[in-house]
Length: 456
Image 1 (tube, rainbow, N blue to C red):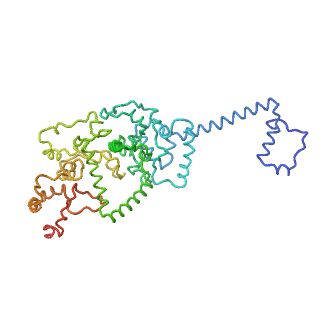
Image 2 (tube, rainbow, N blue to C red):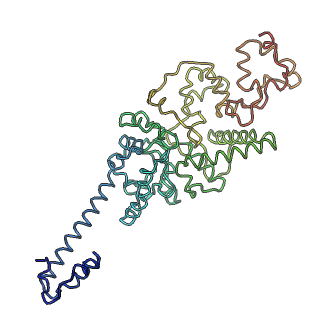
Image 3 (cartoon, helix red, strand yellow):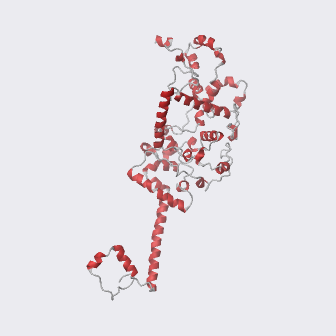
């Protein structure tokens, strides 16, 4: 007996050939149409089957959504090991990945799941060399505001004054400043590529999650504020808020390299001009920050504009500090560079070696007084060169100094003093080698070499 009742005996039975001709779907449809829907028992049976079907479909769908929304599901793919390990070591490890990476709302959830099918495709056909968040999938302010208030005016440390509400009302994405809060900017640092994914564990994540990458980067603030003062709104470009795709970045670098080569060939000093322009801009911002250069701007670049508690150390207020601070720098260089280090003032983050990071961990290297290191800082640090790039008074008039300076550079220590500002040879165009803050180099005049070289 069929579930829907006895078969109609009045109807002629179908032959075996007729049954073969009828397809499965068509056969089921014919049986469905043949059901006596006037019979209340059949209607109850249909309701029961429909109810069971809905439970299976919607229950199964909910189960799939719940499973794919869990962090453990993300961790099931080996290529996500860096992201998952850093997540477990972060302050956000009590919430799920989707609370940050999918905008609130059921429609957004379903849309994201459909788009994520491509991740399955990549997992099967070939995992990308590096996982980088795309512009379309960047964490939105809606996600952050589910937990965080936009009314905060001072950071938890009590030092930085940041009008979060004002930034949000300008439609500035939270990730413009807080890009590393969970994953410590691993993509920008280049430590989540294929060959090092196996190095990421819950234990190693603690060493790789340095505070300077979890917290907002001062260079991001400076870069954005400087662009605003020049009439720009950089956050409007989605690419400004996410790590650059390594493949696209490599193409851009190749194109830029070709353009630079052409310009250098055509103009001779194109690369040098770009480097000089960059150095001048950095020094200009530093001079604004320390209050030595005032400008009529929308956002003041002085340190006290954003910092509430940071004050000028008492040592800086002593008499003749400007002329005597070199001795303090030798003894306390590690403290000096906490503020006076231009690498903290740039938005770009250099690539890192994960093996070196794991070996060193977050250990602080104890500084021992080193005059050579201090001289190197004076030579390369834009904070130092912003003031020290001016010609010293001891050089006197040009015609006298050129004929008399040899006697001032006889010993190795005297020569090292010269090399704080000058290079021995002409810096090569586009070279990444450390160069002096001035464009005057020894071989400009001493083209046949030096006496010391001939003795050797």
